[in-house]
Length: 142
Image (tube, rainbow, N blue to C red; front, side, top):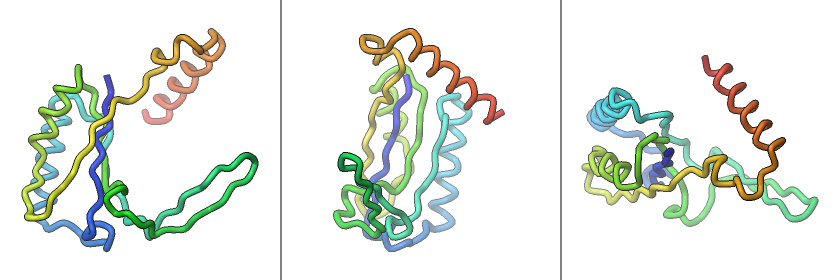
């Protein structure tokens, strides 16, 4: 099962503050552990919302909203995608993350919806299309 680990933004991350060399080194070691364990599928930090945009969909209307966005506590500063057996395993790995600064860090863990979760409403054609798209993505990554 895949889980997305969402690292919430802080006032510092939204201000564009970079981690220290020590923090980067510690996070690099943690990421290496995840890779060595064979569970890290992806992971990255994100630029502040001031360098981003949102697109709002209302019927046929599309509205682009440039950052920065309010409510820092609702924003994302980074993420991992982990392939683990359970939510409990994801939690155990995340608890080892090197967030040791004086600032509080909140991390959210959410299961990624798999194609099988849509089985009750997916037609065989839709399943075949999904399989083709995933195969093409894998080929592009190789």
